[in-house]
Each structure stands twice: as structure tokens, then as C-alpha cells.
Length: 513
Image (tube, rainbow, N blue to C red; front, top):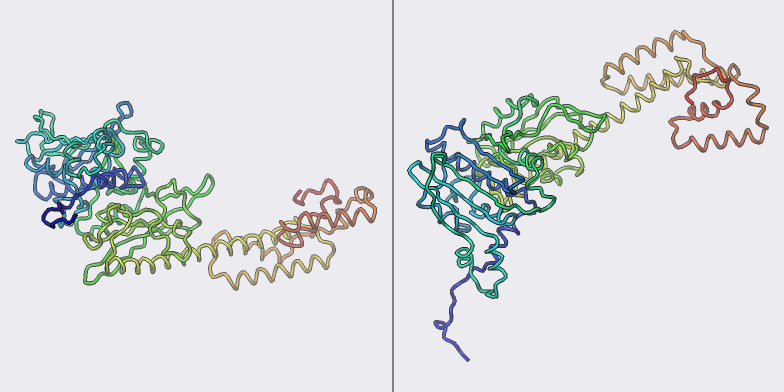
């Protein structure tokens, strides 16, 4: 049967499945919902500061985790939403009033991310003391009921009407004049209950949120913040979780393991060139010993990329810009993209592709290669220092009478080898640590003066112990000792010393046993 075009309903419909995408399908890490709500809070605070009701030093974002009630509350004292527009803004999807204002949040979808992890998501707000409190509640049970409905053609608009409730409540004397509050009720135990884990939330926000450096433990905090203040509207915000202020995780001391530490010895600054006089990004990295990959538990691993002082991507964002991926994990630093130049993607794990982003990646590649070279130089230096240490230790055994020589010819050869080693070290090493310098002076003085008497094998051999071996068993003993020590010995001398151990007098204790 043929139909006239006018008889067919061609009105486009947006199905309810889009709602699943912006809630449960939006984030691969539940903790990202904290970032989304804080992102909206700092935008609201900026508006409030710019429009007068709030002084910046009074701005506050508070997070409250209540394990007993299974609730999360995130509240800011920013501008809030006026009653006249609150309900429409908070029930719209993908229609943000911030679009085009160069703010951190602009798509109008991130606020619903929390609904995937709780039974009820509640927004409360007002923008003036004369207003009531506008409330919008999103109910997960209603959403699940709609999703299981036999009506597969339910539209997004119909779904929102069923799931979201709107009301006004009279303000009390305790209600802030202007604020925005997000409440997650009956938070689900999801992914080891990380949303309610105080330490995990703190660590995540310390990395991600626009919080200040801790000047008590990070002596470079002030100079870095002064450098980054060249970026227009660069700010750090007071964010507290259960009344504890959150700081970035950087500190002067870097604990690599139980017995090993490193230290930040200075800061290097850099910038990425843009199209015109304004840079594309400003950044810094720490000068450390570049010993190895940093433990992830320190929360400082990698050169982190930030825009609006909020992290984009994570510690692995720039891994492929290094000559060896592992060198990315040896770094501590940040790259702050100038506001508005690059546009984060919806998940904020990267940027939308553009000419500016290509330029950013090119310069990140140059930075990665430079930092890789520092790691390689540091690694080569440590290898060289280890070799020098081993060489000096072997020579020190000679002058401290800690070695046994087969005869005088063996001894003179060891002395000549030691002098050659010392000469090679002096000719090839450009600079020495104080320790190496002092050891070199001591060794040279003692070798030249020969203020010691070398120990020869015939002086310490124990005839009684030798009698236990006939010629056949003695040869087998020597062969087995060589095989047992060959792989782990640094030189033939060490193997010879191991052969001697079983035949020297018991009162001779200079050999390592």
C-alpha cells in the first residue's frame, strides 16, 4: 500500500537509550562524578565572584560522605540558579546555559552522571535571599521502571517527565543566600565502594580538582602558582571533604620504596607556542634523580595535563610522547592549557581534534623526548657510578689487606691493574661526588706509598685442611667452586678468593665467607 509523505509521521524522536549513555555509560571510573560536580561548582563560584555576591577568599566547595546514611552531598556557595530557570536547566539534557562562555562545563550532561550510582539524585539551588529553594529530584527506580516498560518507543522527553520531579521549598534561616547542592541518596556499593571511600575520593580529587599546592610540604608551591598566574583566571579553590581541605599531592620528598627516596631539587618551566602572542600552554616539571618509575600510590606520577586547573586525561595521557613509555612514569609535572584554546571531549579523557590540538601534541612530543633524554642520562650516570664503586671497592681490598695473592707476580699485576683502573676513572669521569673524590685520594696515596704488607697464599695455607684432599678431589673442588661462582662473580679474582676460603688457616678472617 502506498502512503503520501504527508500521511507519515516523520517527526524525529530521541529515545530513552540516550539517557543510559549520559548516566551509566558516560564514565569508566565512578569517581569521575566528583569531578563533574566540582567542575560545575567552580564555574558557579567564578560567576558569583564576577557578579559581586561573593569574595573569592570566601568561596568554598564542601563534600560530605555519610557512610551510615549512604549519602554524598556536594555543595558550593557560588551563584546558584535563579528560581525562574532552575527547573528547566536541571531537567534539560545537552542544553547548557554555559555554552560559549568559555567555562569548564558546557554540555549540560555531566550533572546526571551520579544517577547511575544511587537511588535518588537531588539538586537544590537558589541565587538570591528573596527566592525559595528550587528542587529537582531524579529517581533511579522510576528510570528502571521506564526502561523495563514494554513501550520501546518512549521518547527522552517522556522519560524525563516520568523520572524527574520539580518543586519549590521555602527557605529557612539556615539556607544560604545563594548556593547549589547535589545529594546522592542510598549510594550503591559499586567497584569496592570507592564512591564512599574517603581516602580514594581525597586522592582522586587531589590529582584532578583545582585545589592548591600544599606549601607546608612543597617548597616550590608559591613560585609555580606565580608562574601559572599568567594564565587568565587561573585559580585554586578551597575544597573540603568531611571538613578536611584537599591539596595537590606534590611534596619535596619522594618515597620510592621502604629504603629508597628521591627529592625534588628544582623546577623547570616551559611553554607551548600558540598561533599568536598567547601561548598554547604553560607547564613545569620537577628536577629529580630520575631513578625509576614512581609508585602510583604517591599520586604524582606523570606529566599531568590540566585545563581550567582541572585534569584532562590521567597519568598515562602523554605516555606515547616519550622515547620509552616507562620514562613517562619517572616524571612529575603539569601542563596547563590556556583556557578556551582546546576543547575537552565529553568524557574529559582527552581533547577534541583541532589544529590547536595537533600543535599541542607536536610540542608534547618534543617535551617527552627531552624528558626521556634526562632519564637516559640519569640511568647511564648511575650505571657508571656503580661500576666506579665496584672498581674502587676491589682496589680498597688490596690496600686494606683483604685480598690473598698467589705470589708476588700476582700481587704486582693487581697493583698495575689498579693503577690503570684509577687512571681510566680520572680520564673518563667529568665530575665526582665528594665520596668518590675522597676515596680516590685515599687509594692513590696508599698504593703509591705501599704502607701495607700484601698477604700471599703460602702465608695463610692450612696444611691440615689441604691433607683432606687428594689431587683428584682437589681438582674437582676447584672446578665446582668455579662453576658455582662464575655467574655471580665480578672478576676472576673473586673466584680465586672463593677457592682459597676452604684452605686458609681458621684464624685468618680477612676473606669474605
